Length: 155
Image (cartoon, rainbow, N blue to C red; front, top):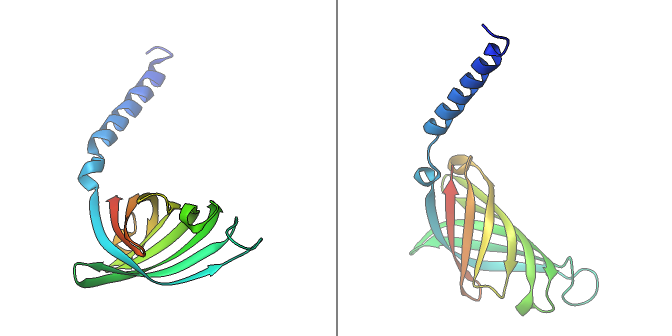
């Protein structure tokens, strides 16, 4: 056996294990599912920090009810920090939000802008049946305080 035989053997074994892992891994599309809810904000509170009026660091907290058709499916709570814009109409926020649904919770984070009708957030975690989920949440504005939320969950 040559001096390089153990290295070639290790490299072949590693390549074989890697190929088996790739073939055994489920495809992302096969594991993805979408959950849709209507979110309606029912209470808000804001903190004007720093200089008077819209400015960096101002906060908006809110509570929402979640529904699907005529059935209530859960609740959500969010906390957003103002980082850009000169008025509420042009405000841009960094937001975190937790959705309490049947079987667990989904946490999201990302940038929200009133100038966009569709905002996309990262799913940052979950509990219960959403424990290992990742993916993205898409919030489409459908009214002054209403959104159609789609959670594209991958496991």
